[in-house]
Image 1 (cartoon, rainbow, N blue to C red):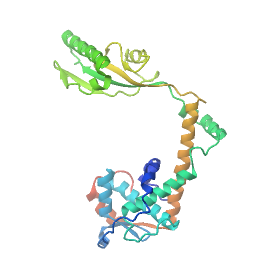
Image 2 (image 1 turned 60 degrees about the vertical axis):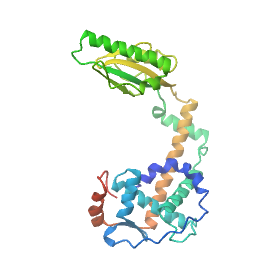
Image 3 (image 1 turned 45 degrees about the vertical axis):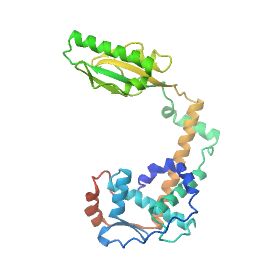
Image 4 (image 1 turned 180 degrees about the horizontal axis):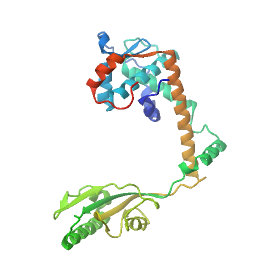
Length: 309
């Protein structure tokens, strides 16, 4: 069975294209008919539509994906475009049906799927049942986003180096309190008096996150975002830590947990509908991939990643 490609990863952003769809009724400028594609450049056919190596190269350059993923996305777009035409959404000439037009038609299909599965679709009882069945995935501890300036100390640091690092970290915290956390964090030098200085985004802190001694206490002592009271010493050096955001815990049955459950239910329903649509389109419009040309041409486009089509 054919697997759904990278088009699925663009599913959640389909609504962002709604504004562009308003212009679909206007004919774009006339385009020149492209020269015929040489058979040795054809990597796939979707129905009567040809996907050649140049299309794959262009997609790789535009989206930064592997050639295999690019080919999968081009196939998905072609299938959705054919499904849109079959539904009567396109009355333009073949010369106008270029790649950009195919993408607009594909987005129209995705927007229809969103309308068929609206956020308010699931009932409250259905959402509550889903939340109860997935409680472990929905419940979250309090989470604190942090950033830090680390003054690294060598393993054989002298007392003078340790004191230099502490003083610099202490002054950094004072500057954060006065000038703003991110403003100070973003302009740190690479070193100070021979000690390396590193600006970092550590992982979010939670009550159960493994942390060096003193780090958790300093972070969770704050009642609001801002720099901690004093530098934290760890085997790595001196840390000038600041909390940038505090996310309260999400408890079972809470309003937030139910809202997350609803969004997940709708996203899963839309994803299943999308996969079913692509499978149906693939059965209606056969996808024929040239293994010989694919293996010969795609390595020339860029590095490979993931399974083939």
